[in-house]
Image (tube, rainbow, N blue to C red; front, top):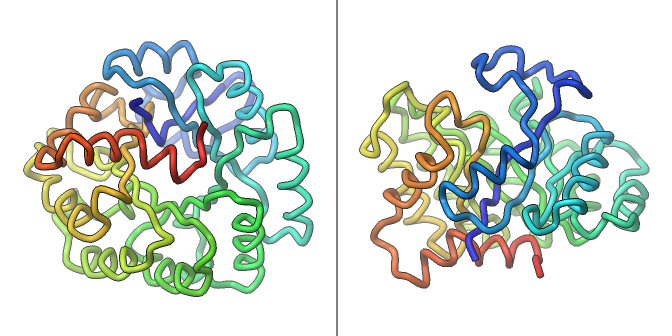
Length: 279
């Protein structure tokens, strides 16, 4: 089974997405499951994981309902809850107890937008992360190089929490930067409770970037995480100003072309099944 471990859905008629206003005009519209299914077919993807886009509990509830209504397509939801809310554990219990609660597989917060580079290590945030882990959910890390030292600390201090590094830590591909990011990635990968998503690369590169521009970054995560802890994600439709869904999939295949058939099956599906506990 081929699984896309990272994509988004949004409805501009229902919700205000401030971040979307700065994006390419072609994605400043509603993207629903019918759009997703057409895109998935271009790369023969079987099922997906849909990921939050705003810090609103209402979006999490909407995504869970969408997943339940389209279970043949969406296998899981990575939603948002307020990690620093003292009642975060109760919120997670309530979400997971609902009719569509079984689709909740993870939680995410846009950490790289926080003013504090060490936000993840705040005591109140760590309590929230612990609650996510105790609920049996993964916590997804949306960070840039600035926040990677905090990722190292939190992965070490919370060894029982499953962490997923989104977009390979968003390295400065457009600038050709690699050394600082690469050293930090090596340290993060030393913690077995962290998995890495091969996703989001095209939006960090210059327009027209080729496979060769991305290869050093792909090589580094393969060397450090290994095929057993990497998951393919399209980051659709954020990717569309740069490459089509099929184009992003083909790039990922090119970056890991040296893997065996069993390793490719892991990267493009089985690792997601294990990390998210999918049926």
